[in-house]
Length: 109
Image (cartoon, one colour):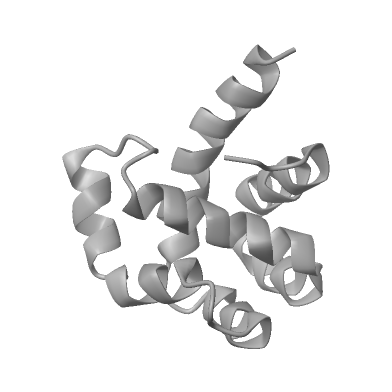
């Protein structure tokens, strides 16, 4: 996982903001923020982020979206559209990924 401090802060902001503001933040998020979300998807798919059975079940409904976000060949504009909240993949993905990422990031000091 190679996320910068800026990317980690963007993910934390998305995680803590209320649902009604999340869509506005995601509309204006920069390229690095989208890449951070995509990297989280990739790490979840590769098993680098531990998930509970309940989280796996919730994410399994969004497996096509996760795979598309993790795919390198998919255009960033398409990924941006997928990230906008319609289903709730970010509600499960980001808090789970943040717990692992902040441990790694803050533990590496």
